Amino acid sequence: MMLGLVDVKDWIKTIFEADHYYMGKLDNKKDKSIGIYQRKNPMPPRVCLGGINLASYEVKQVSILIHWSNDANDTEQASYELFEALLGCQRVTINNIDVPFINLVTNEPVDVGTDDKGIYERVIEMDIYYKK
Image (cartoon, rainbow, N blue to C red; front, side):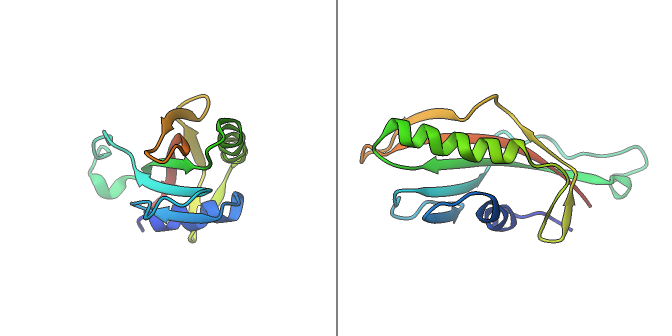
């Protein structure tokens, strides 16, 4: 069973409140939006001794874009709320898939500046370890 970006997006809706949620592309970049993306620079396939069929888990590498408001403080606060919600997740289920571990790649949401309309954005990168 594969864990998809849409699964992650739908799960994020259950732990963090935003006005809009997107997967793959933020259309029209509405304020207070969360975008879920595949991370760049993915890791190579995990192949166990004896073959890929013996692997018991996979890793989904995800970037979460917090596209919030034209107030830097509001954006920072919202991104930390989501970060702390993710940090507190242990042994969750996403679309009937057991997720024993979520690894946040950085120690805080990363400030990526503003978009062309002056809306502040932050990014949270994570690795989702899930059972096959």
